[in-house]
Structure formats: structure tokens, C-alpha cells
Image (tube, rainbow, N blue to C red; front, side, top):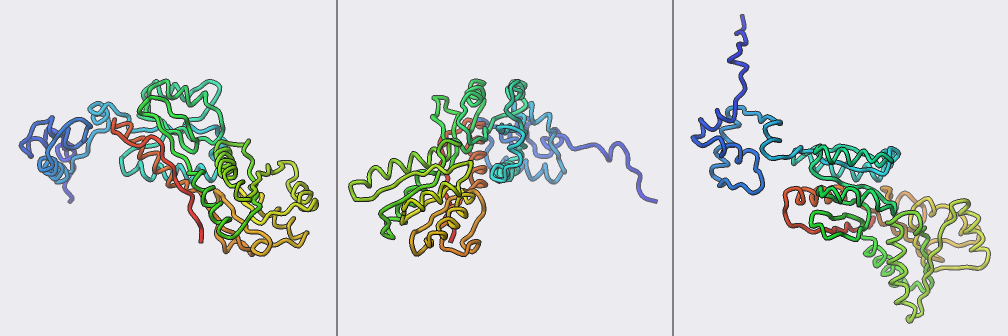
Length: 338
């Protein structure tokens, strides 16, 4: 017959047991295992306590850990609305966050913007140690609401004029660097008449692209370079581009933000016997994982890196939570697809 399980067999190892076996105080065990910021335990003692804790199969109490550190070990992710959960781009940013957070034993709590501002109740109840505000739109009120609670905050995918609060930062794609690369490619290939298809009205990232494009193009006028932004029609882009090509409008360098506009543009150009690679150079930026082989025409592709953005957002927020100095504005470069 097998040995029966007694209450003694089931007794969990406590921190007191670890302290006794290691020959140190209970406080030293607590600091060695929890690594609370501001406490000091030399590496030799920490290594000894950790080794003995593992040998005794010690499993820390989450409640005790929370009481000692004053942390919930949760982070709130404020999304624009429930429909944001369908965004593939947002999901990849979230994946980058949680994959990094898991290594630090943190969990993610999803909250959403609403008229009742329920996300503020989550903060005030102490259920999260920090907030990541994920958005692309121009609204500021909810960002300001979060910041006013004085909780460590990172705004993700939105360029923000940072307040004086040292524990508020933002992570965004480096849109200005992308536009610099776009112009370098066009100028290297001898392009003189350049167009950017981008709707700067729809979201903050698009506005930053427009802002950078306008700034650089103004400096090139003296060199005989013309650069124009075309705002794609939401109602009927095909008719719009047909009319432009039909009027005799020509560009030798075309930059398109968003693959949904690229294919109609290529089909329209073909109606006027215009081909990318022969009559104009084509550059595309996108949030979708595209590659050159996905198309039967030459195109240079730049992709945002949402998973890197998410990981950087957690890295920054973790520093804020631990009251550590860190960069407050991180720009993640686009990735050029070969």
C-alpha cells in the first residue's frame, strides 16, 4: 500500500523555514526573494537564500508578496474601445507587451475608454501598478485623466507632448526617420516629382508622416524637387486617381501609406500605360506583414514593428514603476523588407 498523505506532508515551506535553513533573518529572506527596489542584499546572500528556497520547494504567497512590495503586479492596457480588439496591429503590440511582461511575473488587465470612465476606477482601486494607453487617434482627454492619477503611464502608438511628470512617457514608430529614408531612396534614383498618398486627418501617426514629408519637401524646393501630398478619397479612390492620371499628372516617385491604396493606384496607372519600376519608383509603408514577393511589380516596403513597440512600452513602464531613470520618448524605426 502507498504511504498516506498527512497534514505534515502537505505543509508548505514558509519564509521562516527558509530563514532558519539559511541562517538569516526573515527580513533578509523577504528582500532576497522579492528584490524590492531600495533594499540591499548582497549577491552572495541572495544566491544562498534563493538556492535554499528552491531546495525546500518554497512557493511565495502572492498576497504576502503584494503586501511586502505594495504592488498588484498588474498593468492596465487602456484601449480606444472594444472594437480595438479586432485590430491586428494592436494585437501585435499587445503580444510584444505580454511576452516581455511574463518574464517579470506581471499580468495585463484590459480596460477600455467609455463615457463612465471606468478605467479610472480601476486605477483608483489600486488594481494596477501602471497604465499603457494604446491609441492612434488625436483625443487627449482620457490620456490627461490617467496622468492626473499620478500612476506611471506610457502612451503607445501616439506621439505626445510630454508633461513634466517624470513617470509619463510615450513609444511610437519613428515616422520622421521613415520619411527621411523615403526621400533618400527617391533622390538616389533621380526622382524630381514626388507624391505621398497619405490621409493626415485620420490619425496621429499619419499626421506625423505628413508633418515630416512637408518639412523635408520644403527644404528641397531650391534643388528643383517638387513634393505633393495627395489625400486619398475615402468614397472612391479609384475615380480620384483615374482623374489625376487622366489630367496628365505624372510622378516619378510615389510613396503610399497603406496597402489598401496601392493596388487601386497600380491598376489605375496601368490604364494609362504607367508601370512601377519603369515610369515611377514606388514605396509603401504598412502595418501588415508584407514582402516584395507578395507583388508582381517592384516596390520598396517599410513595415512598422508593433511587437517591438509593445516590448519597449513595458520596458519603459517597468522602469517608471520601479522609480528608475529611463528615456521618456522611444521611437521605434520602421523595418525595410528586402
